[in-house]
Image 1 (tube, helix red, strand yellow):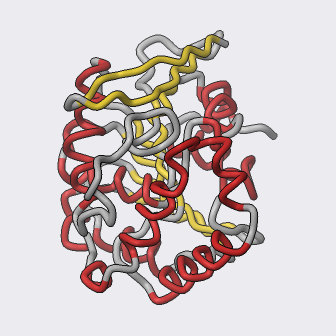
Image 2 (cartoon, helix red, strand yellow; image 1 turned 30 degrees about the vertical axis):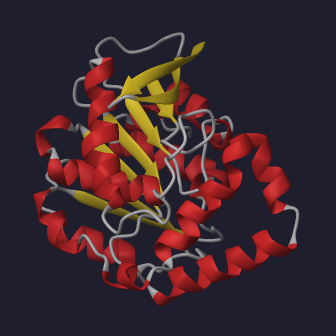
Length: 268
């Protein structure tokens, strides 16, 4: 396996990236792009991208959004983020990265905010995507989401969580956390949703949700699958929280293989 860390410049912003190529990579296999959650970085995916690259024999790109990890920071005044910040992440940064790297119809694997961005991109650039794998996406704001964010803010203020996050976000840690909680807790954000855009998604879609997700309910999954135009598959995982690829990685990998037409590679 080849792993390479590099930077890509998109819209004048330096984004930290990692490329993973399995030793037996399939010829002409589309690249899988990983899109992290609100507090995520490349390292916080741990070894899951490498595991999925090995299982699928597809190349992988993992990147850190602006303001995260080793990517360029936000400017003063950018936080809280705009209510439509998912559009900026989709239309400017994700689309710019795909263009900059010369990728053809990638597969998008997104978690939480990253899954929402993946859905946004598939809706806004439907001809540019081979498939989407969505974990714990939000397509509208639920009471449980705001309650979970409020709980997280209390934990951040009263524990060593900031110290642990500093290993990943360095000097940007407070800004990363504020970009999440302050954005989602804006009164105007309570009415945000992207349900009307889902009909523009035509690529195959795998929608994953844990049954004990403290930031969203199963209705997110049902709403997504009921409104997209392309084929969709639901995966509601038992004994699983907000991060299915950590809580139940084998189920996520097996479902991803089937979703990508690689069922013959599923163990057992």
